[in-house]
Amino acid sequence: MGMKARSYHLVGNHSGGGESSRLGRFVIELQLFASNKPDSKMPQKGFELYNSAQNQSLKNQIAELYRPGSTTGDGGTADALRHEIETHSLVRGKSHYTKAKERVAALSKILKNGNLSLSDQKIAKMLIDDLNNALKGWKR
Image (cartoon, rainbow, N blue to C red; front, side):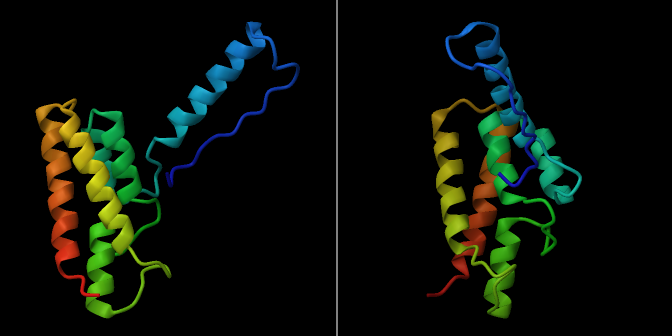
């Protein structure tokens, strides 16, 4: 996800359930929770969108779009793709075309599920529109 995940290792017998099994599930849940949190290197726009969103699936997509350390434009995938189109050079050695297409599909699926609040719907639609506008400039 681009976020820093904490890794914890359990010591002892992990088979057969009981206390060790519950602890193992807790650690896995803690790892997943930590991996979906923005860190201080996430671009400002992504950080603000992430904190504004309520739905975890939407938050995960925002975290994919605004990776820590990204500095091209607003730090998002759409601006990276626009930069690639304008300069004919890749950002960090990677094309962002496929990623933009994949994020549009993922965000559209989340939007169609109907589990988003009105504010989350607005965020998802804004992200889809931004990505689609960037994709319009792509010529193969």
